Structures are given as structure tokens and as C-alpha cells.
Length: 550
Image (cartoon, rainbow, N blue to C red; front, side, top):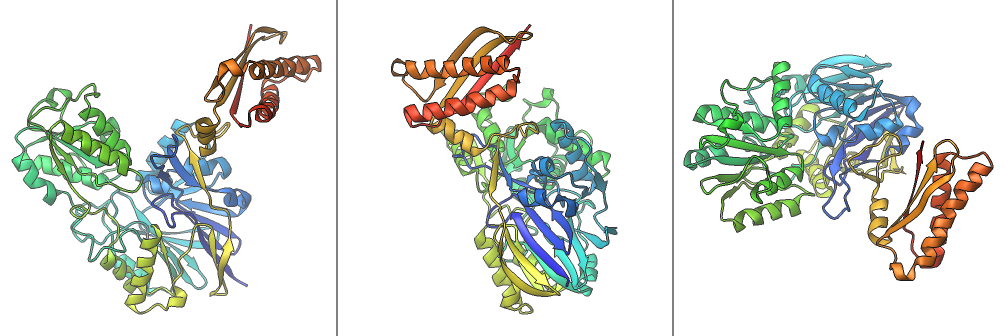
């Protein structure tokens, strides 16, 4: 019996957090490990990643993780995954460089990274893998064909069809895709974000035709926003500056570093004398580029508008161009920025989504791959449910795939194929959202949303005590502080009891020669939590702090 399982742990009925799993008999292949932005009301959570508990339980069977492109939705959850699974990573040069830097910043070592080509055939274990070039907003993006006994399982990645992209690191190869299509295609996993959009995405993804008139009309500086992960758009802007005789000031060093990396890889070289220096910042022919991921770009621009930026202050001759159309999760920040700009009577140009497309496949792009690949099974991926449904309808309209062979999956829903036939798609595994703050700590894990909710509803109790490092005798405290829990005048007995719990836990542990800092803190957390719940009906966060000094 030959068994194939296809499922996602993230990316279905949502925007981002992509993580797809292909199981071929006993071997597991993972495609991407992404994150998505938290929504504004999610209590300080920075990002959301996929639940990887299934992969942790089956880590001995995992053969590879493919990172298909350098967006957060493809590798933003990687550090979380690596806490559970030390998996070999296969990716191209540009994302590999960014991943190495991320792992270095997080202190993660001994991760095996294999640099591959965008177009390559190779084997992992006994399985043949073929990568193929796709056009995306970042360089070095690729799709994957995983060979099985019944044909290839193909993952398209984010893509558009553009015969005039101009840069080899961004270009796709339709003849290569057609060649793969001549082989048998068992299942096609194709992106869905643009499935409701008519026509081809190209050329509406290009910003040059939108900006040229505004640049010609501007009397002074131009401050323009753009998402940091649309590198093709930044390159377009640099070329536009070169043609119009303007200088480009990179507000964010990280983006300038990215341009340096493109030069190092020989993917793109900024035109000579285009990059502005600090001395050029106040000159009227300067274009200031403000970049950031998700809501970050709006927050940076808001700080500039509010006069909170150290280097850049808007003046009456400036033109502000918002070229970062709002996406899910950042609507509040985008609206706040626009309101602030209009309050101060700045000249503002907001470029809407219908004028500037993201580099996702529209209907004709999707149809082209359907015609070329002619898959037996079609699985819409990457998008909200309305996008997945539109992609499924599109496949039906093409006419060569029956409704019984088009499968829309939820996160955690497994499509199981036995001997080349769909057996069922009803098995479910855990695929919850994991919400983390910005620390990504590998020691005790990142704060989750539950902690944030506890702080906002039940408060926090902090219990501090000072011990002699050698004797473990109490030399200071305990000191008990509360926030958001109790009115002090009515709570003295609770604070006294919590203080006594700390003293008793320390003294008993020392007396019994069982003292460790972490064990005592755990005991205090448990006992104090139970006591406070009994007395107040609340479950505050208990934070014991034991400081040992010489």
C-alpha cells in the first residue's frame, strides 16, 4: 500500500502563517514555516505562528523543510519550529542569507542549511525533488515538484506571469513549467489570494506607471511608504529616481542592507549616485523611502507625521505618498496614519489596491498553470476561505478537473490518498494559532496570548525576596507588589499571606537541603495562586523573584 497525506498547519482561511506538509509513506516534507501579523486588539502579541506539535511528535520522519521565498509568511515561524524540530532546510541563496542572520540573532546554532538553485533536480532520501523558477516580489523564489509513484505533487508558491520582469533573480521560466506539466501531475497546490481578481496581475503590480506623474508634479521632497518585503517595488523606485534625476534616501538601514545583499549576490546593483546621504535629506529632489513589515510601516510614518522622528520632519512643500495599500491586520494603523496626515494639511496621495496590485496570481495566471500542469487533484492553498473557494470555482471553470477532485482543506485537515486514490479528507489534527511576543526565547518560550489576557483581566502579583548567596538566609524582603488586582486598604491580609508563603517555601527548602531557585519559585507560584484564587476569585499572574547576593 502506498499512502500520501497532504495537509496544512497554517495558511488556510487566513493571510500568512503558511506551513504545508506532504507525507509520502513514512517520509515527511515540510513546505514553509511562516508567521502572520497579530491583529491590533491582541494584547501585545507581535506575531502568530503555526502549531507544530504534530511535527514534534513525528520529527524522526521529517526529511526536509523547503523555504520557498524570503517573506515572513514563509519563514517567520522558523525559530518556533526549530524549538521542536531540528530539520534540514533547503532554500535558495537570498532567503538562506536572511535565515542565517535570523538564527544568529536568536542564538540558534547547528541548523543544517542547504543552498539550492531555483531550477534544480535533486534527491532527498529516495524522493526526487524538482524546483522551478517563479516570479514573486522577492528574488530567488521557487516552486516545488515532489515526485511520487503517481505523479508530481506541485506547490506553486506565490507567483505571477510576467514576461517583462527584467531581472533574472525575479524571472520565471514558463517553458520549464510546461516541461514539468508534460509529466504526470498528481496534485497541484496553487495559491489563492488573487483568485477573485480578473485577468493577469501584470502589469498592474508595477509602481512606476503610478508614480511617474506624481513625481513630475511634486515641487519638493517626496516621502513614500512601501512594504519592506516587496523588494521588486523598491528596485522599481530606485530605477525611477535614476530616470528622473532624483536621489533616494533609505530611511531604514535594514533595506539598504538588503540592497547590498542583492549586489553581493549579483542580483541587482543600485544605479550610481542614486543613494542619498544625510546631507541630501533636506534637499527638494530627494525621495525618502519609509519601509517596514505589516503595521510597522504605518507606525514609522505616523511617528514622522507626529514630529517624533529624530531626523525627518515634514514641511509644507513635501508630498507624502502612501504606496503600501492596507492588508488584513493593519487596517487600524493605516487609518490612523491617514487621519493624522490630513489633520496637519499635508499633501497626501494614497494609492489604493485597485491601482497597485500585490504580486499574487490573478485568475488568468492561475488558469495558465492549470492548463500547463493538468493535475489529477487540485488543492487551493494560501488565502482566506473566500479566496480558496474562488480558486476552486476557477478550476471547475477550466473544465479538466471534476468537483470530486478539487479539495479545499482547513488547517489541520488531512487529505489521505491510498494507491493514488483519495481515501478520505476527514481526519483532523491540532492546528491552533500560537501567539508569541517578540522575544522568541528558546529557554522558557515566548509569552502567549493567555498571559496577556491574564494581565488585562486578573492582574499580577510580584513577590521579591533577597537571599545570601552562600547561606540562603533571607536578608531582605519579602516585598509584595500588585497591579490590577486588589485595593491595598482591603488586601493587607492577602499580601501578608502571600509574603508568608514565600518565606516558608524558601526556609523549608533550605532546611531540607532541597533548595533550587527555580523549584522554590514554582512552588510559590502554585501555592500563592491557589490562595489568591480562594480569597479573591481571581487568577492573577504570580511572578516570584528570588535574588541571591554575595
